[in-house]
Image 1 (cartoon, rainbow, N blue to C red):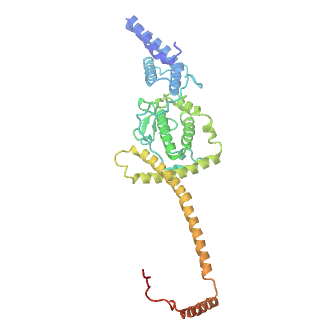
Image 2: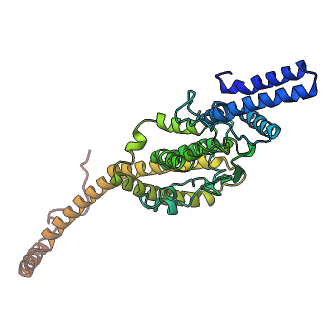
Length: 379
């Protein structure tokens, strides 16, 4: 038997095809097939299928490989007509079987400029005011997935516009949680840049990790079903763990989280105001990709406006006020000099002036020996 679980299916097919080619007698061939079905079926139930499921949840085997082994296992049960009675129970695998790789979260150039356009976001006023101590999942801008049944789940609801519901047990929902996590991280990074809130991604990683450990990991040991939707879940946990201890440290102090929530509430109010400005702007006509550019321009304009106002106030308004104050003081001094004398002094000065004018008026302004015409000397 091969130790690599991915090679079990082609190995069993080679054995069955070789037996079919070598044996021409129908009864002998069917007897050999039943013996091989009992051997391979017991091996797959006890070792191969649990191993393949674990590797699938680690994200290191494709959907077709596991599906082919499960279909072959059902054919063995139908051939033996025993439903696996007498076979060993499935092996409990509690360790990592293969090397779990981290997810590639870098966005490609072909993606939309707004990665949140396909996601149903909560109202910022709702999730920002929700205390994390009461309901951790409702305090996030992106809702968590919801199972139809927490004990025996068969479907999951995802807050994405293009695929809201996905099956957990068919190819329709293969790696749906990985796609949900990747899309949510891209959206939260975009929101963090526009809202200047770097805690969004860390909050989501912590919340989604707790959700996986509570709702997904207990189904890994299920011997009845294989959940293709859980493929790659271990890669999600490894990616979150690789980001360091900052995620855990981010939630050690409740006061720090409360301040983060208060800051997020203020950011949400600013974002709501920004949305109103964008909705009334003339650029929202035909190209929805200009939304982010418009927001960037508005933020730059606000910064330039504040800086220009400060410069005008420092270099123009303050000097004008100082000069005006000095002029007022000079006028006040002149007023005090002119209009603070007593009325008697005004009367004395006026009488003296009148007497002086009367005396000077009796004097002739022209000399007596002066003629009206000038005489020119004779040459």
